[in-house]
Length: 174
Image 1: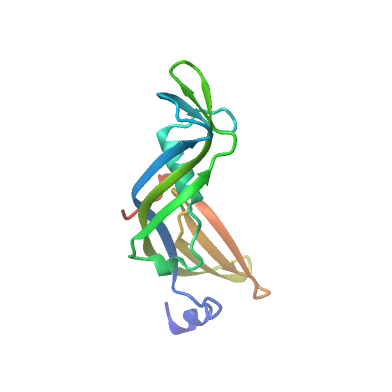
Image 2 (image 1 turned 90 degrees about the horizontal axis):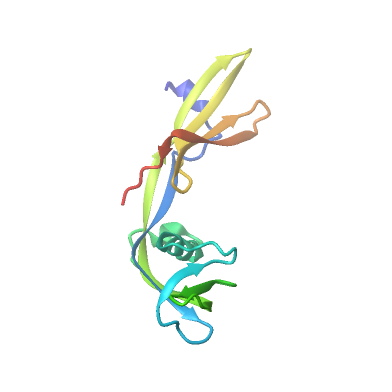
């Protein structure tokens, strides 16, 4: 871009969008029962009586880890976790079909946070009798790839959009 074109983006005070993604290195779960532990578990069910697979159980724990106030402070550090995950109205069944109420899940493990910078691209478009200043950057949300698009309006406000990438999942750097 020429210097004159860059001046059209003096409202954009950043050069990159930063993504923070947690990578769980190890994660253990111990199911804690209201009374005694059943002799042999067959299945676990959530509040809606939906069977909880191992993947759903791990995702429940990962979701329960509180977000950091400043995720950049976690980058490159090994963060231990030990917490009680509330499982209100969860139950388990044993091999005899008996139902056992679950009190909570005791979770422990650790994670690291990975920071990825996504450079912001600046574009200018002309059409319909006006000029458009548009900035965009890759910005996945969860596992869904997408772009963050910022459009400068004539009244000097900005409109922000997120558009999903219809081609698939976000790439991770694990």
